[in-house]
Image 1: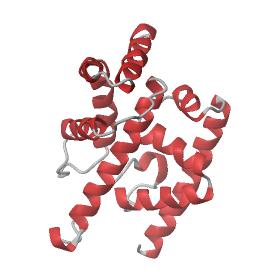
Image 2: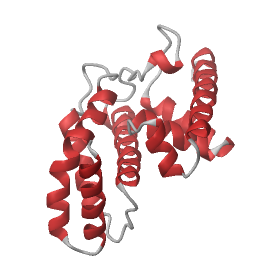
Image 3: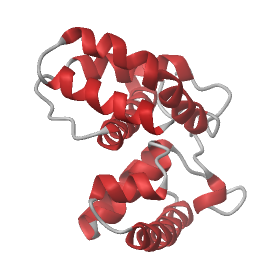
Image 4: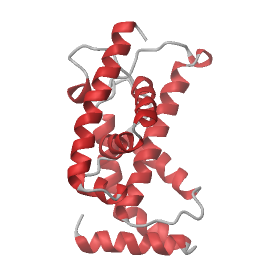
Length: 194
C-alpha cells in the first residue's frame, strides 16, 4: 500500500472514530484487498475441506468491525492488528464449533503453517495453536502479540513494531523465540496425544 493510501486509511479511520459512518464505506475498498490477501494466506494453510472461505472470513471481520463503536483507531497498522485478532477469533470459534459434539464431534483436525512450527506430518489445528498462543501469552504477552500480528494479520516486522511500539529488532527477536516456543509446545502436545 502506498504512503498516500496509508495516510488516507488513517484519515478515514479517524473520521470513522468521529462517528461518520460514510468513512467506513470509503475505507473498506481501500483495505479490502489487503484483508483478503491476509485471509487467503491463512486459509491457504487450511484443509481443502474447510467450511469457511476466504471471502466469508473477510466479510465476518467486516461485520465485527461494524459492531466496534468508539474504537480509537490510531493508524493503519492498528486497524490491521485488530483485524488479525478478529481473524484469529473467527477461525478459532469456527474450529471449536465444528469440533463440538453437537456439530459432529471430532472431525479431522485443521493444520496450520507447518513450515513455521511443526515437523512434516505432525498433527496440529487451529485450536491447538490457539491454546499454545494463550499459554505463550501467560508466559510472554508481547511474543504472543507478535505471532498474532505476523501470522494471523500478515503484518510486516515494521508494522508489528509500530503497533506494539517497540523496535524492529525486538519484533524479530520475539518472532524467532515465539516460533521456537510454539514449535516445542505443539510438538509436546502431539507427542502426548493432546
